[in-house]
Image (cartoon, rainbow, N blue to C red; front, side, top):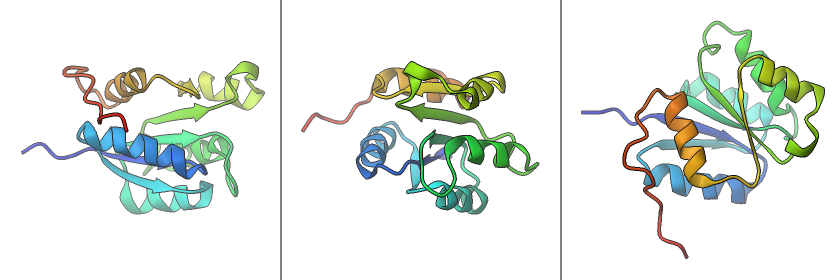
Length: 137
């Protein structure tokens, strides 16, 4: 039996978490979430997710700082991180560094199908049977 992949969403916008959670669970992923950077770090260490969707601008620790901490930790450095940000128009030096480290950066708003393809690619899964979207409300 195929084990469900675990994705951590670290974002300080509850509606973003809910939007992503519904779509990811509809596509067969287990989702855990964190409302800020500190909770995100604790969840990564506790749960060891298969992938992290990480907002850039968050309280306590921002996404760039979290990625640096995780990259420097041998037990978490291999977990793929996809940054989600509304800051694409003006890539900061920190975002440019993140790109230099090979992180994927996706701007908000994003295409949910493209995000699923990016997630599957990061998890080394085939992009087959996309999309499996929940019904519109």
